[in-house]
Length: 256
Image 1 (spheres, rainbow, N blue to C red):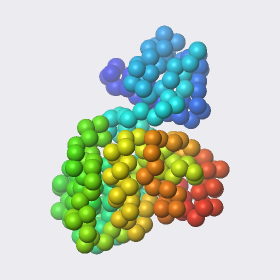
Image 2: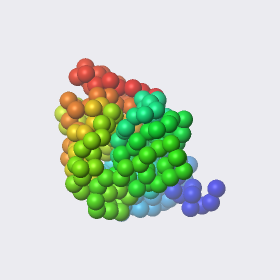
Image 3: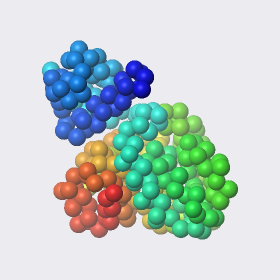
């Protein structure tokens, strides 16, 4: 593995570690990753410059305001968990269905498991999601949205109701930057949120696809309140108290 790849992996692992415990000291991170404190300080400074973490005296914590990360950065975070979530989500789709996959990296993790299906229509505002299905002749893809949002590789803006007027969407899968009982599914970019809200309203069933790091976090704005969410697929590290609270409110929480 190249030095650059090792650096990228270590910094991603630092973010994951901070998400798990909230904050860590430079000494703790140095011991955990087997590198010098000088190296850790350089890592923390680089991550802080990107808005991914917040430096504190002697260490770091996850940034209190969630940054609007690029698609490629988000794709690498918790990739294994997203793959499991995507595989489970695909089992909820049947041949002949019309479904929504939003532009999130977790929703894109559903795509590889759609090959087994026939005559599925996927509605998405995600350019990566759409391009991933170019080689799937069994999938009919409908792109919605208008303006290119480069950070998310998505199209955002008013959804053309004429396109969707005669389409019956059975189920939609939506990633999020945060989820709480009080605020529901939330995201950072307000244009993305507005597009998601319109798609949520068109779905007969709404499923959140979020890894454990999103639980208990609140991003800029809500796109699906708790009473709009039918199910959440998450990984087995999701906090048990919040999972129980969601289930108590009627949300089917599936852990993988």
